[in-house]
Image 1: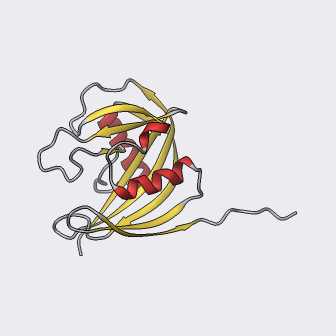
Image 2: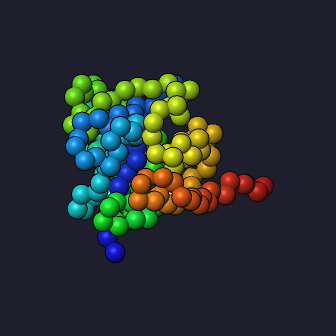
Image 3: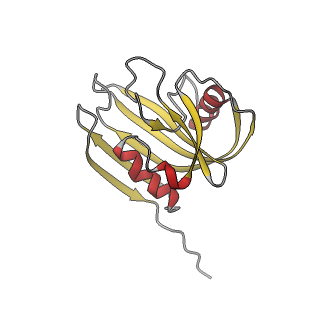
Length: 165
């Protein structure tokens, strides 16, 4: 079974998410979609290492505060039947200058109220609502068919912690 670890990173400036319009690569599975920055792990990387490297490479920004939001599995996500496992982060503190030219596509700050209106994966629309609603940490599985249509999803949220006195 083929498996790929990756990160999904939403840079958040308090009223917008930095999104990537995938419009530059030929034969891109994400072609035409608006997605987060992030990507595949390299050998020896932790999830945070991967997230910070991918953010820097794709945006020119250095991530300072990364808040884990969830973990998603995407079974048989690619044409070769590869399963993807993605760590989802909200990045609320970062520094540096946004690059003007990203190899993956066009970067844009998108107002919260516009994010869910852009073309993206059906599953992204679901878990982005969880981020906007400040749901607790989640474990999810999104299953797509060969044409990229969402067939099913499952989610479990981390229980809220209660403190006893």
